Length: 82
Image 1 (tube, rainbow, N blue to C red):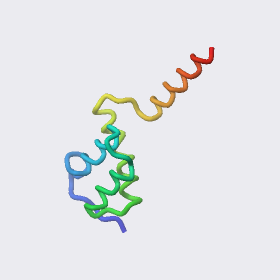
Image 2: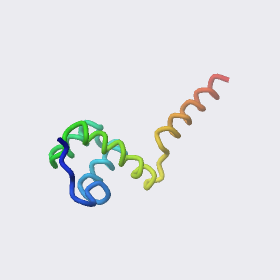
Image 3: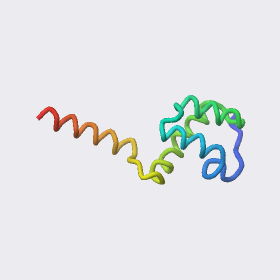
Image 4: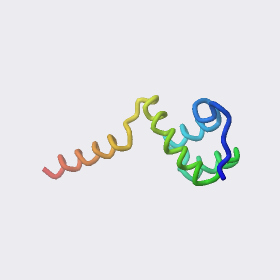
């Protein structure tokens, strides 16, 4: 069973630090999950929550979503082939 974190954990606490490190590429999903697990959440819940909150962090940092980034790469590849 997954432990619940205190209010604000994912938006201004250690959870936000783990998610931001993941988004910026300073930590892998597994490393960020390990940090969150130290705070009492199970592995599956930790990685799912990190992926969920990464969307908001990307938006706040002005980074493209994963879908936008993937379509940009695909468009560049298609242009390179022409």
